Amino acid sequence: MNFLYILLAIFIFGLLIFIHELGHFLMARRCGVIVLEFAIGMGPRILSKKSKKSGTVYSLRLFPLGGFVSMLGEDGMEAVQGKQPQEGGTDAFKQDDFLINSTDEKQTEEVEASQTPQMDPELAKHAYCNQSVWKRILISLAGPVMNVILGFVLMFVFVLASGSGSVATTTIGGFHVAYAPPAEESLAGFEAGDYLYSFYTATPENRIYSYDQVLRMADSLNGASIDVYIMRESADKMDVSIVLIEDVALTRDLVERFFTNSLTEQSGLQIGDAVKKVNGTHVHTYHDLAYEIMNQGYQPMELTVLRDGETIVLKDVKVPSYTDNGATFGNVDFLVYAEKDFGILTALKHTWFRSCSTVKMVYDSLFGLFSGRYGAEAVSGPIGITKTISDVAQKGMLNVLYLVVVISINLGIMNLLPFPGLDGGHLMIYLIELIRRKPMKRELEGVINFVGLVILLALAVLIMIKDVIAL
Image (tube, rainbow, N blue to C red; front, side, top):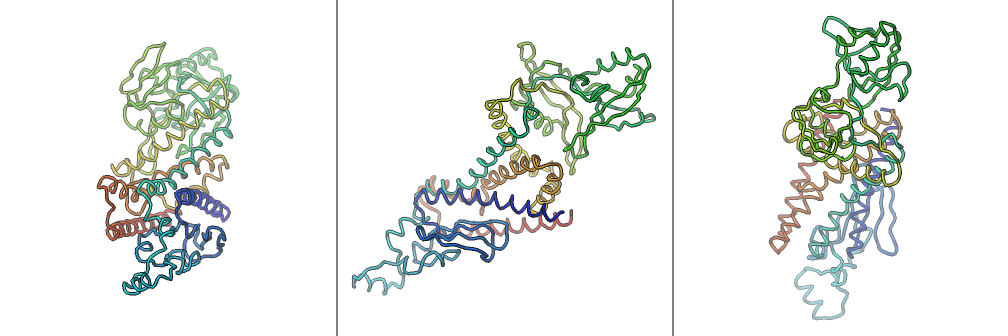
């Protein structure tokens, strides 16, 4: 990996972590909680500045992975025993700031007798542990929600930057014609899986939309040679290239032996059909449709289409498939019509549905992981993601922007999982508190979160080892 790409990955991680922690920070301040430290990174501090107004320490730490917002009373102990905050709080407040400042002799004697100094009541009001359960829920939610919101905003930028070519409908405009040679024969220049793209020149007006169109062209040529452009996908389906093959003697016999119409057309799909559902899942844009076919098309599907105003259900629809990282996916083998216009409303529509589709993709991936459809090789940590960023960056920064969208939404959704140590784990504890109408014991809550963090750290180490081996 190029060093510049590693710096780019660090910047992306830092941005996403900053946005996440900013969500917690802003909501904590909005709820009146005192924030002791806002830190980006982990480990020793390399830069820090204390706010004279709020007392919050803003710090940058050595290791550029992770970050935290340390709040007064976050571990539930400061408010009870008046202890000084352990993480980042020593620079923000002195021990005396937490104690009752009174000359009342009786009160002083009681404090000395109990040997348990108490927090100043005014400060105690601003401790995290003393907030209502609803405020604690909002503070825990704010980080993941900020990541999801960032993903939606960047998706809008991506759609606008991609232009009109990035927005399309679910209405079928044509079908791929695939090169499928007999086992004992082949055509020079063609590879299995190629799709015929156009004749003469690689321009839209010469696009090939159906198998019948190819047969008619072969009949009209009467054995003469023709230049053919084919569409060839990379092994990971991330890239598509248009390749010229010159002087192909296109005849009806050659077409019938070496080429085939798409599986979806053979399954009953027709030009002009507007696809509305894939196996019961609603689709609104081509991106939705392509994702659902990729995710569900490894086996026959049920497509619900609107044809001439009538809703028709096509059963056992098949598409080509491919295997990546041990999992099988479906592949689109048809063309769709583009949107008629490309205004702000169209961009917003596609932003919304593409972002929602990305959220669904995260949950589908988790389900696939736990159901056994995806193996351990499909899971990546910071090292694996850095390599992916490096690979994608070489294909253009617009691709990097889309990857940032996916990572940001992924980070937000993953943090909402009800697992101890994650924001979702805190939310689960607070929801239990709402149901029980009393808080969980601090000691038990601490043990649950500690065990969760240990498990998460162990998983992180295993994934890191896997990513290093895969380099």
